Image (cartoon, rainbow, N blue to C red):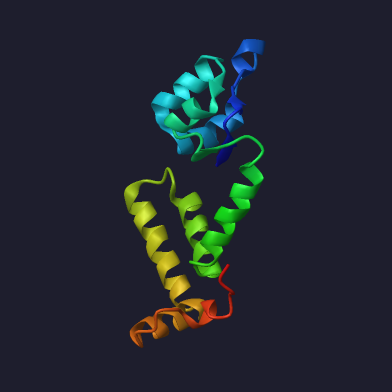
Amino acid sequence: MIAEENARFSYTEVRIGFIPALVSTFLARRVGQRSLRRLLLNPEILSAREASDIGLVDEVVESSSALDRARELALEISHKASPAAFAATKRLLNDSIGLEWREALNRAAEANVEQRSHPECLHGVSDFLEHKSTPAWLEEIPEE
């Protein structure tokens, strides 16, 4: 997540008698138990830098530049990764977080088998074995 330096973060549900039930599930994955307790039990306001320090934010940028940085980062990633492998990796991460290790390992093995038959994987591995520096599926993407 990218935040502008003037951004502020707060989870104030407990202040008004509500509980941050749904958001707690996502935040636990993002910041861990210690920071989760701080965020949800103490309705303080965090600066963008403080949010970055606990892992809530990945990068802090100057005011009015978050959207530009997000686009830049998206282009950087899209020029370096197979779209199918990127999507499959995101699914695997989302599906396996919180699973018992053996179940997570089984899910990872299933994802591995599934991805190995994808055309982008077949092309990328073939090109790698032929010592090509750029997989065939990336050759058509113009450099910026």
